[in-house]
Image (cartoon, rainbow, N blue to C red; front, side):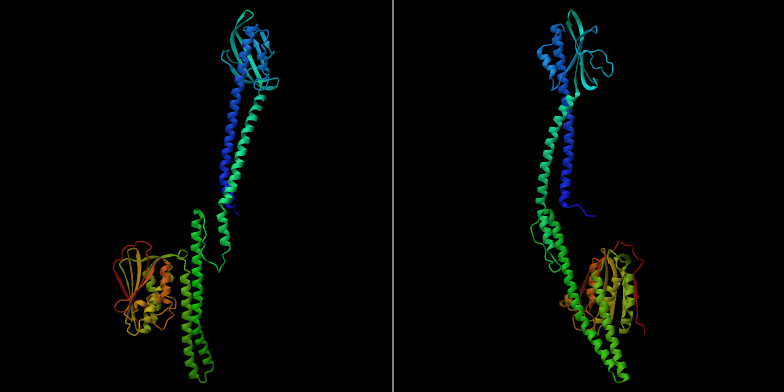
Length: 470
């Protein structure tokens, strides 16, 4: 579903409350105008009634003064009808039949306002009593005046129309100002969109332009993403280039040995060259597997396939997988676990492969003086540690950065140069690290990752020794 534009959303957010306020103000103005009109017209009726009462007393009920007649003809914009009768109920002056009150009320000297019907028209009526004397008859005379409410409604309508017109003009003016204001305010974002649209897969440079404070976070995040994509693409390109370079020589060797087998003249030559071909093929396959492992470790998403397990279990499995290599070399590896289980959360297979690479690296690069390799698992200070220590030739401190690079080796020799980079990548993907220490003899490599949660203590430490078969 297509979402509304930011301009439309902003205008809607701003104008909706404004319209609600305008409608509320209009409703309040209508009620206020109705109340004011009622007060004005009621006061007009009362003034007319008082004038009629005065003229009746002065003329003994015979005639109304000119001023009163003018007042009756045009009170508040319309004529007023009147009726006067004496205390004994005798008609004095005015129109013969006044409107009847909706319900009988006790006679009172206080003015009584009510709505009624006169000649099928709605009217507003005032009835009050005034003590006076007419033609020798004294007492409370009842004066009734009334006026058609259509006049009052027209007055309210005119007043409300003027008010609504003013409110509508104000709202329209504000809407126009908001429209152009939002348009101008969003112009930097439109320019930013144009700058982003000009980017391509070959142009991942950071966006450097002045943007509003509210958009700086978006630009910074986008620049970070562009940098990450650029780094990833560069890494992928370098990886493919290095992989092609590393695979070219083994594949050429396999091809040469295959051609040598094909051209062999004797069965003995075929057997010797076939053995060499199998060995070369095995090395090429191992290199390809290492390349795939490194790529898989680089793209590892821990959140997708995370599981909780004891790092010692992965260490035991890793040690079992490399046992044939140790047995062939006559080395007896050891596994030591601490007093607390090293519970971690992550990809068990990748951590297991990382430990296998550390063990294999120690075996392959330990040199002829290598006699022991120890794998120790421990948990302390919220961190699980897997430490592989050997007594081989060791690594010079200056060569440590080199051996952590892809295809990097301290000296020319066997191996693909991917074992330690794979282990370091797996550790980093699990939020940990890989460190290399060079004591006086041999090398100690430590893989650290955060513990999943504190665990109860074990009954005692355990030492597992695996010996090479005779």
